[in-house]
Length: 134
Image (cartoon, rainbow, N blue to C red; front, top):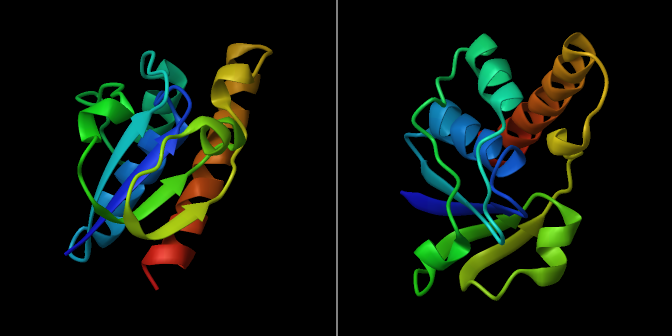
């Protein structure tokens, strides 16, 4: 089984969605985990959007990349530009980068924020399916 570490700045949204989708859609081939350069807390809008997609993330928590220090992964994937710039080196067979909009930056009404989070969720799902699950 191949291992994947998804990294973003706060481990609050994008990396969690990528981790959850890869484990749900291709868990027979991959074991995904996620971490942040400066972890904060899981974005509640992301938890809600993922639940709508049939994935329960209520047990997820934000983790520091230091929790994974010393481990080797088959793939190390940064999912935001800022994490790519400041992330320490993690040894992996393949390093990848794909930037997605940050749900923490979304503003507007609850409905407007959720619409934007759903769009990022769907973009991440499509990318995970195309990149890993084909």
